[in-house]
Length: 275
Image (cartoon, rainbow, N blue to C red; front, side, top):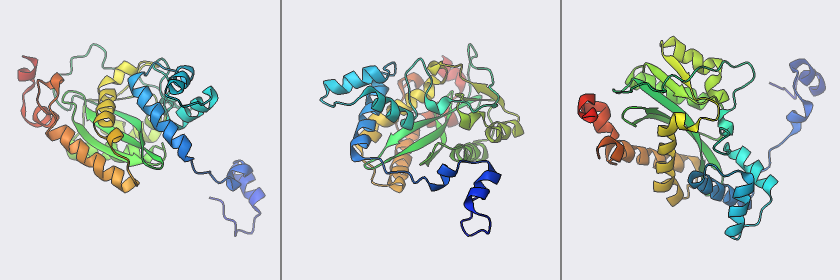
């Protein structure tokens, strides 16, 4: 975008592009090991106590012998994309001007695969650093249909996961997300409209509207992520892929009558599950 070798000076280029000159010279600083450790502990506490705000998390960390200020806890929570239960995660902030759609699944019987899909983003800690994970889940069977990792919370990796799910499994009738800017963007909602899919979005502060994906994140983190320290993004991608294969094909789910998501999604008729 900005060409330092162009005949126009950089000051004139940023003026024409209407961007801040300071942004051109800013170089992000690496996150310290101490902050990475704090972020992992905050993530674990948040999974257990999603109602805890920065003040309570600060006090819980203090009980564990970790002294940190409330403002710093709040800063790290914003970086991770999480906040308290009554306020949706930062991954759920719509961008100005983006259209918000109504929640369509309240009171609706979901009785078959591909009737409704859901998608969300979560923070995944590594040995040094972290990544964001987006996944598409079939609401009825709990099956993970597609997923992607990214080092930033942009829209592109969400689109990639969506495209894979659509190409491999066809189109659902309803697609549910939160109100995050990634999902309210014209590019994302436009892709859903192209397929004739009804767009559903969680109500503001309604974490339970996407509860099945929240349960997936809890299972993933306690059964896998917190037991490993990924050394690289490629290692995280490889091991999370193996976990999702296990989750779909071999892990029994009590809510599915001790069957696996694959069994429900591909084989078992909905009438048998309802019975």
